[in-house]
Image (cartoon, rainbow, N blue to C red; front, side, top):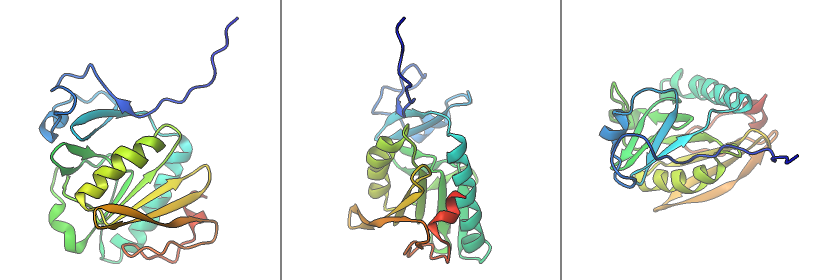
Length: 198
């Protein structure tokens, strides 16, 4: 008997969806995909499909949305959105961050259908299925668009890496865990990292 090791679905380019050739996808092409329950994104004109989030990912997502909403939206500093909110970063880059923050100074980016331009902060809940994609393709797309801060959260390790845009690339401010607070310039909160993963 042959045993097959456990495998994790990963975020990969997807073929077989009606549309332009890979490398030429735009927001209009993306928006024309019929709803089929899948989560699609376009980075550098390439259409990707992400697997469904785990329960741990969803739990962390809810806590990030809660705390950011309490400290940003409820205090009148800006708006907080959760997946599935479309963000058109630029030509050939359409993503659905797990959480995003648009401060009042950037509110013109908010349209009835989507966010057009760079949010001030993006949070991605990384999992084994998405870590490579979040660290390469999406991180590069966020940097190109000018997203000021990128938080990469790991629910398994219960850590958050804070990346700050410096010129055209992100610089890590460190990986934070347990009782540490994030030294965020966009969303300074008296919240300990462990609270996002309870």
